[in-house]
Image (cartoon, rainbow, N blue to C red):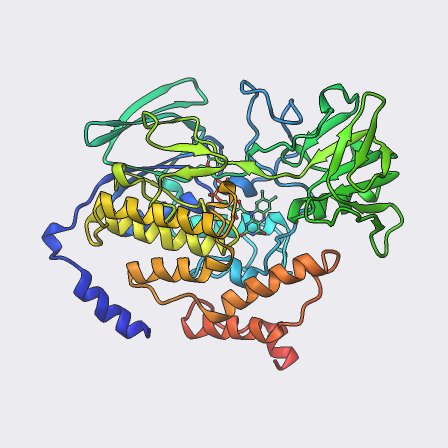
Length: 474
Ligand code: FAD
């Protein structure tokens, strides 16, 4: 649908100005999701308070060399370190498709002497700098209460109570019309169950607490998981370790091979068991005496502050019930979640979900009845079950990504996602899986980069094409 037709359609959707509501809204978190939520809520004339327990914007992308004292993060009373970013991390998606749709993630001028990373797959520092640029451009920081952790969110009649605690020990107890939860979901580790692990004498760490490889010098290390973080971290560690063994359930049961080009990185299927004598037995029958296991096994959705009297549950990483992964039918629109789906274009999704929430709260867009939303959730679960997907994949979009993003775009009257963006995502995933060593520096989709930049230029989101593109004549 053309942009003009969208504007026409929007005019038809919009109720009379007098019926538009301006609400007092709490946003939890000032990461990539919370920042764009705050912008969209304010654009829709809501008054917004963003609670952020850190002292900076950027969420996950605020790298710290600190990690949690408990390396598996199992102790519920531990001091939480939010970020899971490791020192060597570079993005796992090309930057053109990763950024917000109206604020492209392109190389920007330095600010305050920060040096910038213009690579297509830049380091985590560049993502943080981009989010800081975004916050500065849209004057978002003025809405953020830093060093303030939300400790309780619960319904109070038709409103929402938000309790918080700041770093000076001052407690807050406030009432809002609505709460938008943007607390991120890469901080609470999921640890693999390994038979016999309780008597195994070695060390264990989750990737959440991994920063640099130094501690693994000369060790034999088993890394569980071989998707984005597992692939990166095992390659980081192999530079200093004696041997690294990757255990992955996506490898066939007889897998045993040295990674091409490496002398000390082996691929295996999953671990069969761990033993008291320090040995680890893989399902292919191979045995290694290991010093450390690194769990690159993902994360759990976690909302320790949320009290919905059991209405919303998190079971096997399914947060529900949620209409389109955003609105809990019985608690809508006062409570909403931005950023739960994965295997998608995250920042553009945060942007679209935020526009939807902002417009629903103002009354410009109506949600279906509670019953209809529940029917939709039930139908969604049935589709998941028919395809044989486990419950923990409820929020995994994967192949449904285009349909989901375009459905929300349609709701909010935004143009559908750009083809080049979806093609970059798909191609990016294929390269990540098939050329894990080189995907960040070798690609064959230059034509998509050109399309992306021409698109940014056409929309006046950039002033000119980057010199590399002009020089290469592409
Ligand atoms: P976060 O960035 O985690 O922000 C949540 C914020 O909420 C934090 O600032 C936190 O302090 C705050 N908060 C939490 N609880 C409270 C509370 N109770 N009170 C107050 N504040 C609170 N995505 C990509 O698009 N490209 C990539 O290359 C990429 N690489 C990744 C690599 C790793 C290792 C990981 C783990 C994830 C990666 N992601 C990537 C996904 C990444 O999580 C998202 O891009 C995005 O940054 C998530 O934003 P968010 O705002 O949802 O969460």
